[in-house]
Each structure stands twice: as C-alpha cells, then as structure tokens.
Amino acid sequence: MTLETLSENKCFGGIQGIYQHPSRETGTPMRFALYRPPQALEPGARVPVLWWLSGLTCTEENFTIKAGAQRYAAEHGLMLVAPDTSPRGLDLPEEHAAYDFGSGAGFYVDATVQPWARHYRMYSYVTGELPALVAAHFPMDPARQGVSGHSMGGHGALVIALRNPDRYRSVSAFAPIVTPSRVPWGQKAFTGYLGEERALWAAYDATALVGGSEWRGPILIDQGDADTFLGTQLTPEVFADAARTAGVPITLRMQPGYDHSYFFVATFIGEHIAHHAAALAG
Ligand SMILES: N[C@@H](CCC(=O)N[C@@H](CS)C(=O)NCC(=O)O)C(=O)O
Image (cartoon, rainbow, N blue to C red; front, side, top):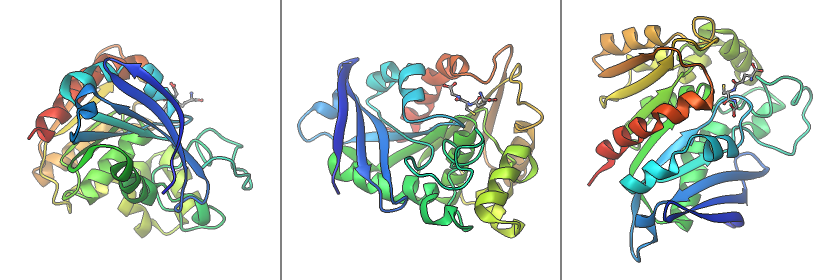
C-alpha cells in the first residue's frame, strides 16, 4: 500500500497533509486530506478518527481549507480524514458534463451500471480501502471512528453509519441529502450508477435504511433555513420523522439565515466535532 505525500503543513500544533495513493477500488490514483492533531504526534499514540465526506463538486481540499476544523480537532485530539468525492483522471462518456453526476459526484455508492461500475466504487473505497490504508500509515484507533459530511457527503455519512453500526460510533451531517430516492440529485445519480431498479437504491437511502438499522447512537443534523436546496433536494424533516419512528435519537437543528455554503459548515463544525469527540472518548 504505497502512499505519496503531496504536502504537509503544521497547523494548530498538528500536521495537515495531502496524500495520494493508487486505489484498488477505483482503479485510479486517489487523494485525501488527513489532519493529525498534536496528540497523534506523541510516540505510541493512537487517536480517534472522524471521516469527513464532502458534497458535490468538492475535492479533498474544500473542507480542509474552508471549514476551519483543525482547531477543534486539535482541542479534542481527533484525526480528520477527508477523501475526494469521486475517481479522477478518467474520461468516461459524459463524466465531466454536469456538476451533479460523474466526477465530483460519486455519491458514495458502488456503481453497478457500466462504465461506472469499474471505477465508481466510492462506498467500498471510503468504508474499506481507505480506512485500512490510513490505519496502516497513521496512528488512528480503528475502534474509535466517526463519520460526518455535507450535502452529498451528509448522505454518505448517514448511510455509512446506518449500514455499519458496529464500525462507526458517531455520526452527524450538515444539510444532508436524506431522501436521495425521492429528489432530483439522488434520482439522477442512482439511475446512472445503479440503474432503474429501485430496490437497489434503498441500500443508499438514509430514510429507507433508518427503520431497519441497528444504529442507536445520537444523530446530529444541522440545516440552514436559507439553503436554496432546502425542500427540493434536502428534506431533513422526512428523515427526522423516520428516525423518531425507529427510536433513533435525532437532533435536527434548523439554523436561521444560514445557506448551503462552507460558511455554514464553518459556523457549526466545532459543535459537530465536540459531538463526535464525546462519543469517541475513551
Ligand atoms: N454550486 C453548485 C452546487 C454545488 C454545491 O453547492 N456544492 C456544495 C456541496 S453540495 C459545495 O460544498 N461546494 C463547494 C464549496 O463550497 O467549496 C451549483 O452549481 O449549484
């Protein structure tokens, strides 16, 4: 498992790095951002990790340079890992034609429809290959993993936690796509990556999953009420109702005046990191 260091910068006493490796799942080189807090630099240390999944159009860079999360991760001793949102360097038909499908829009699924199925395996990449790679190269504690994300990445975070309650101990999301099977972004992506058969879609739909999941930890969701995607693409109340029905503790905070941007994420990221740190302590 080779890993290339593209950059490393000291940040709040820790190290913010950007790394690249050849991915078995995507068949392409993949980049990710990883922040080691100062606690991780002590000899023999192993620290909890928070996986951050970004939204449409993002790379590993957006969260890393815009959210201001390192300061809070340093306070709580949390490692942060932000993968890219799709394979790169390919030129599949129509791959770069739209912002909401193909490159920058992997939707954290394992595609079953060609030509996407060969490379667009972001679910397996994020839940399997990347954690193994990070555990082999960095001082993360595999028993203490949490997952969070924004928009398409909030969808990914919720789906991954609900499907793997034994591996992730905390989850939160910003403006997540919670009913992808029922909104235009999700319907476009799922039709393209998974085909017309809707039974397959349910495995990647947080609202469809929550009733049958063994996840019982508290779920924190922040949603700006001035988000222009609210109502059309983002339906947080539908997920909150399904979670309550399933007996899953959910806190949905409608944040007045906030939009869909990383300014919104940056405003509340400290509280999300505290939420994860509490669940991942000890
Ligand atoms: N700007 C896009 C929408 C995509 C978008 O808002 N992406 C969000 C995630 S869903 C984002 O994080 N963009 C990158 C950034 O703000 O740095 C559009 O054309 O409507």
